[in-house]
Amino acid sequence: MTQILATDIGYGHTKYAYGDTIGKFPSLISHAVKSDVGIGQSNLVFYNGEYYYVAESASNSPDLILPNSPHFLVKYSPAFLYYIMKKLKFPEISTICVSLSLADYKAHKNNLKNSCSKFLINEKYFENKVLVIPQGVGIWYYCDQPKNAAIIDVGFNTIDVLVVEDSILSVDKSFGVTDKGTAILASDVARTFYSKYKHQISKYLANEILLNHGKIKYGRKEYDLSDEIVKLRANYTEKILVDVFDNTDFKGLLKSIDTLIVAGGGAYYLDGSFIEKEGILVPNKPDYANVLGFIKYAEIPENDTQFSGGNMSKDVVIRVKVEVSEEVAEALEMLNKVNMKKLFFTSFLNMFDSADSKESYNKMLNFVMTSNNININNASNQTDEKLVEEFENNIMNFCGIKSEK
Image 1 (cartoon, helix red, strand yellow):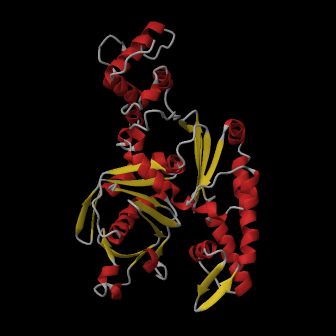
Image 2 (cartoon, helix red, strand yellow; image 1 turned 30 degrees about the vertical axis):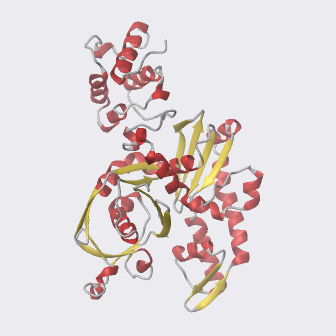
Image 3 (cartoon, one colour; image 1 turned 120 degrees about the horizontal axis):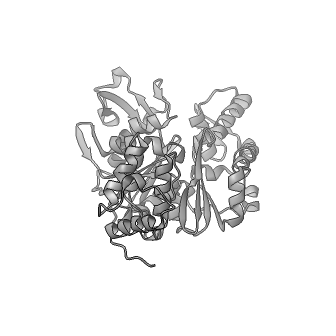
């Protein structure tokens, strides 16, 4: 059995997969009431010098910590990981997969990795090998990596759109948006619930109503919003997904895309007629698609490093678009001349970690070059074909690749 623990710690629910086991729970955490500390401590998590309730036990707490930012994920993901491992009875784990929205990935991936790699909870020390993967990548793997596809991952707070062209995950054409997830629909449900029953409920309880198709038992009474949910789902689909489809860049890509996938927990709430009209594929268990795909991703040896600095697969290369100097941009153009489907250059993305682009550029050249024949001051001159060829050959020699020229 695989020893990979794949997680998708979202702002609404946390999903996980380990071997044949899958599960989910609300991504809730709260400070413990002082009077509870010392009584029934098995339900408490002691982390960073404080006691917390996690998941369902936190739902009625007056001191709930709202899961509404990547900083929340960085700070509290270890507590959720501990909760999962405890539910699984602390199994052997070789790798833990965690994820971030594309909108947050570049800025927060390193902090999330550091947070989850080593932590102390309830006097237990955990040191883990961690992969941080953009949300949506797991869905692509789960759906067997279609060659030309768009993957729309509808989460609670975020929507991520990944574009795949000719088996290439194109990060520069992909995007993530915040405050467009199903939290909007949950807020509409909460307002409708108040209008009909004169009770105020949180959007997290409203999300449970959505999961139960409009029915909920609350305060010893049963409530039914089934008819209202149908209308709200149609409105949400039109309001949110149409915005995505009307995106100028995305609209142009739709003509060349063979497969359009919508997954994530929000896939359950989309209007069926819209899905049918647009020819959308909703995979089985769409809320678990990411974690089940993360396991497939982590099982490939070439992917055995952090996403931003490791291989994707033998047939995949990520095109990266970032704000860099002209020198670095020209150097990347040189790199693109190499047959990059055979590898993903592990070290080149490290240059983005330097604040100064010139320093990054020099560091990249110093790492790659196996000879001193190239003058760094002239290395960005693309008009010199001989220099470009020498640059390519040095890279290929360093990586052990035979030229196909």
